Length: 146
Picture 1 (cartoon, rainbow, N blue to C red):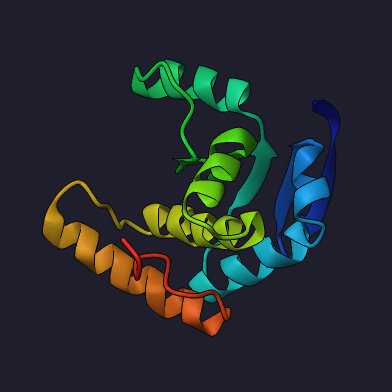
Picture 2 (cartoon, rainbow, N blue to C red; picture 1 turned 90 degrees about the vertical axis):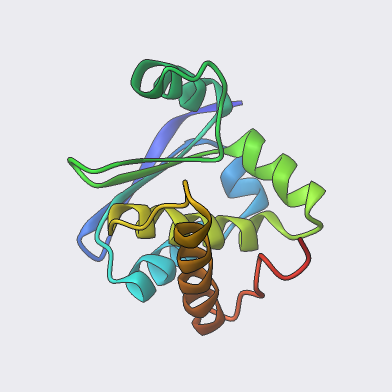
């Protein structure tokens, strides 16, 4: 399922797609990512990749030997998403992969801006900010039906 990768410069940041399933399931991914980053005021590169790649980076950099939906790196600012994890979460949560992508780009951008969710107060603050930004993007509140 790996794609040799395609790169799209977009508004001062780069979007790299290395797993072709992203294009198949979210044909407007580049536009969605651009809108989400603009709404957060974040300038970061984005890599739409696969579970294997994210798992390896998650193990190398965080000591967790499993893929995760989104990884962020501060220097240089970068957001990576794992297709398989994102697709499974979207299915479980009964939402489109496209909407989940928008949410996770906003989530990653907020991490890059210092937001976190390790403690309940932090999580509530981050979720409220995500919800506010996603509403501007016409994406429903991802926390509503938990």
